[in-house]
Amino acid sequence: MYRVYIQLEMGRRMIKYPNGNTFAVNNAAQVPSRPSPAVSYSKRGMTLEDAINTANTFYLDRQIAVIHKKPTPINIVNVSYPKRSAAKINEAYFAQASTTDYNGIYRGFYIDFDAKETQHKTAIPLANFHEHQVKHLAAIIQQNGIGFVIIRFAVYNESFVLPASELISFWQQSKTGGRKSIPYQYIKEHGFIISSGLIPELPYLKAVDLLIAQHQN
Amino acid sequence: MYRVYIQLEMGRRMIKYPNGNTFAVNNAAQVPSRPSPAVSYSKRGMTLEDAINTANTFYLDRQIAVIHKKPTPINIVNVSYPKRSAAKINEAYFAQASTTDYNGIYRGFYIDFDAKETQHKTAIPLANFHEHQVKHLAAIIQQNGIGFVIIRFAVYNESFVLPASELISFWQQSKTGGRKSIPYQYIKEHGFIISSGLIPELPYLKAVDLLIAQHQN
Image 1 (spheres, one colour):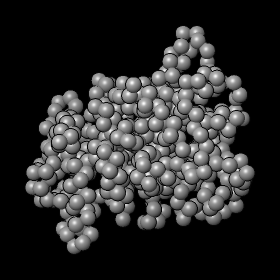
Image 2 (image 1 turned 180 degrees about the vertical axis):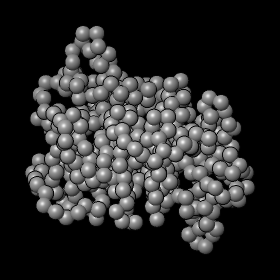
Image 3 (image 1 turned 30 degrees about the vertical axis):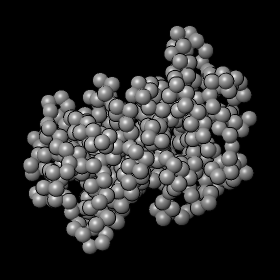
Image 4 (image 1 turned 180 degrees about the horizontal axis):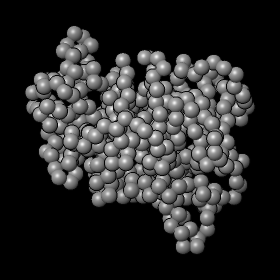
């Protein structure tokens, strides 16, 4: 069951992906002006993705880290050239990503992670993750990279950096009859809480510093 | 001036991007069967991108490195749901990438690069590179990552790993009246040639080993 939401906010058009992620059309000049269902989310604050992107821009500008969100993979079927100035994609479909959404470099370390938000209070269902993401993170750890997931419990307004090794462990156990979720309490004990900041709002690399310290021991 | 080429090759539909890169539609099931201008490129051998992707799959399967090509960024304007099973993108445009095309981890190092092919014999024009790619590679080097470009001289069937520092140096000189290309001879002397292999055809990480050795000195 897929739904799409289109909203206009601060001059950007946001598209809700089927996977729940929000996609920002960042080239406003290419968006034709026409009536569109406008929904303001401003009172709900930034989405998790917005908060991470804002933090990444902050880190990039200050030469602290170079971490980017990867574009969403798309299978293109038909392209036309209505004007000489711009290729127009007329038919395309969302494709399955083979990796996580974010990667980059920080303190010389290769950084790789995904971000998930849940409305649940006691645990985050493993259904939020995909097999290929877990496998990718396992490959990153095998290569001595820093892999993790940022998990946000919306009801508590709390976000955590959870080492990928923990996610992988729960994932494997679930395959042999183990529980299908990671408890909030477990994440609180084995993850690193991201203390909220002003600029950036989600200074997640402070929590990653603790993960790196653990990694080096 | 943009052109698009669509070809069917080994069951995959290839689309030539305006920037000259080839895009492989990897989900054949989503490509409707209909007449299409079929051009066989098989006699020309693999494209540079194909060769890199094949090498990356080889390295991934053997747990040597985890390096992926990033999806091409696209600005989505209109999405519909003709069937409940698949969201359909009806209008989208190619967006400017803010980074290079490839990154990942190898021997614990953060790896970041772009790949360019030229038909020229004596030099590769700097016009093959974009400001944002050069800036991104400069940021990667500042973070102590391994940044480079793979440059292929098609007429000689030779490919080189050129350290990003060399590209940045030429780029900066060109801004103050310096030459607008990097000479073939210079690349031969300051880059690392990728000796062709059988499996994979382009074992570029062997040349990266030499770059890492230089980096550590």
